Length: 102
Image (cartoon, rainbow, N blue to C red; front, side, top):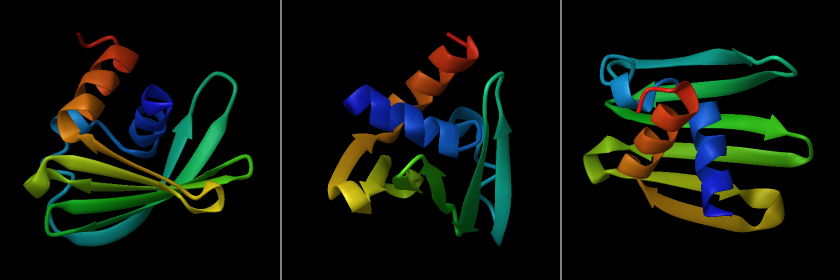
């Protein structure tokens, strides 16, 4: 379950490993992720180096909160009443694996 939650966090985020510029400023945006089989949309909010991304996959509403200042990624799945907290490094490693950048 932990790897699934981290994978969802990575799908909801741009490249966390290179996101320092992305996390600067104050803005919101719609992110579209296109893969071979799916197109997923998420809403991204950035403020002062912190980020929140919201995405719906099937019946699950997933909220990712990235806090580089605390080196942590929070995953919230309110309908399932689930919560996960993972080190930011885990998300970076998983993104590198998913993108082939070992």
